[in-house]
Image (cartoon, rainbow, N blue to C red; front, top):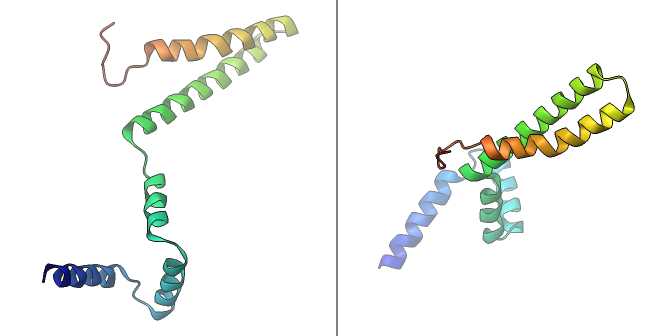
Length: 111
């Protein structure tokens, strides 16, 4: 009895999620038949990012933007290639180090 109820509920959910137009329904059936169910669930999981992953990506973007701005300023305000290479070297080392030491969005470490 419970298997029949579960099957009916699954059919109802599938009917609610199904596309409304006939052409879209045919496309949906063709694509859903081509992909196994496990593949579809892994695709959905790939699009969702955890909060930790979002913070990590934001931190990488901040490091990249600050690095580009710092190197642009070094390029503008220095005349010699030695100073530019030295500035590039220092910014490549120091900017990620500073962000790693200072960044603490959750306040986990009481420095």
